[in-house]
Image (cartoon, rainbow over all chains, first blue to last red; front, side):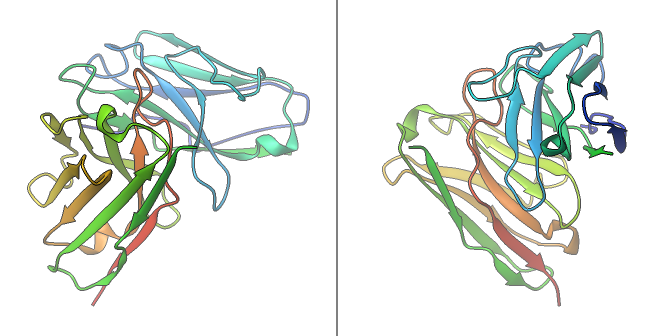
Length: 113
Length: 118
């Protein structure tokens, strides 16, 4: 079980769009369409913002969108706002079925310039 | 509303044991799988273990396999994590997290801090 790979940091200016990548393997991210993304502000509990690759939970901003191709998933945040500055984590199942191990990315720190 | 309240954290010496508890309310506990997820100070999230709704299926991260045991008591709406042979690298905030369907981490508790230090 290796962690999913994310860039350590990304940055953007207010109003811009940014994309955070998440790379796994054919044993985890590539095998399941259960890729989710979490936002964590300092000192706070992580919050679900995307699940099953592209779906947004109730209450999540429509400025968040997700996609996946092969072993790589992406989170795009459009119209950056100061409140988006946070850490972001991707997460996937890793077998032996959809109930089993879970792998989480190392996290990406988003800085809004 | 859904509530998950962890307890049992504290300072423990390397090699010793500790048991965490997570008291659940606001949902039908016995129908949901649950996870433990941890976060070392200043570090990222790490999945630790998962248990199915009835306790029949359990999986662990390689880093804790053989040392930690996840269990649940559906009559008490409580999740447990027995941690043995603790190491300095187990120092972290431990979160109790509910799973629902295709969402591995649905609701999170506030976490309990475990510090392994001599």
